[in-house]
Length: 160
Image 1 (cartoon, rainbow, N blue to C red):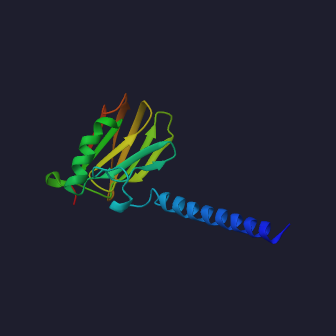
Image 2 (image 1 turned 90 degrees about the horizontal axis):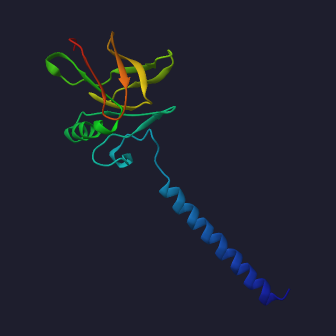
Image 3 (image 1 turned 135 degrees about the vertical axis):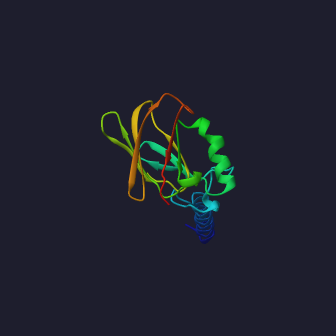
């Protein structure tokens, strides 16, 4: 090879390596964020809806502490198969409720803590039992999932 050909080859390799590096950096920036990112910057759902979480095949979201979040969750409940609401004395909204959903065969479909008074859950059609535990009191309700916006369950505790 001549020096002229070697120089061109080196320049071409250098340009290709730099291009790949820049593209890789752009990809890394665009793919950032995780499902555990609870900040508003990590909220890719838009419209004030809290981050959607995934547990196995079940998607869920919960919250409603702020007005924007409450409105977004209430607006979205028509698109989710199951809507849950948690209240305390004098209709106070509760957060920190542990939710466990068991399917008709006794298998656990979801075990999660609600980040606010509303929880929306995407489950396949079927019969389920929802267990909701606040402090040391657990309540349960049977629900039947027939389609989006159909199943709703409200849990109320008289403890603070």
